[in-house]
Length: 332
Image (cartoon, rainbow, N blue to C red; front, side):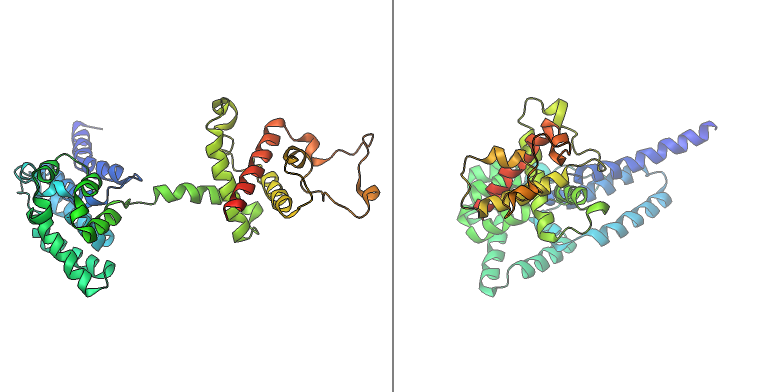
């Protein structure tokens, strides 16, 4: 490996770094949909700055990035870009963008203008309301009407978009409602993947015959049980990684406790104070039988019940799942 190789590697790292930083910026469940367009333009400008001495390579990279951008771009991105207040401030517009291009207001971009009109047509079907919202957008981008207050103009440069609209958008209720809905969106599925991973943890190969309703209830119990364990003093030692290994689960016990909880709610003869008795008996064994002598297990029997080998930690987890199932049923 000679020095030329390392120079090429260094050059490669320099112009791929803006791409990596943009991907990491969007890998979040925060409400950053209004930043999508500006981040893409910034990334292209930074790549251009790194490849000024080799425009042929820049053209190739630019074509690849723009092709990918065309696939992922949505009219909603354009509308969110138009609704971000800081992009209309003189402090923002006076700074040159990466790549040497002059910044301009979002609605001056022809592509953005076309996109946000499409988004408005999809989101607002009433013609009268659509005309009103467009008029309010015109006042917003020009700092006229209710948006001309000195405090509102000054805070455009410093406040987050959602906070600004919450503070100053009340004078245009239709646009205010639309802005909060649009700007509160995230740009990836990271927030949803947590529930998806919990579902895949429960509905795995061994339990692929679970019904949709039962799987949904188990996800509810599992996810909320996971949240409750964070308040325990022994969370770091006993509970933090309790579902890290998909091959070792307590879903069978959780499912059995869910059945016990449902049966408990339907049984009017059982007193409210018998929760501990239900949780510490074998949930798979019926509580009532027409022939008690044929199913009862004597204390001297050598046959152990499935629960006899259950550790105390699992016993507590069964009780917690039972309480969660009962709470969910009452909420319904």
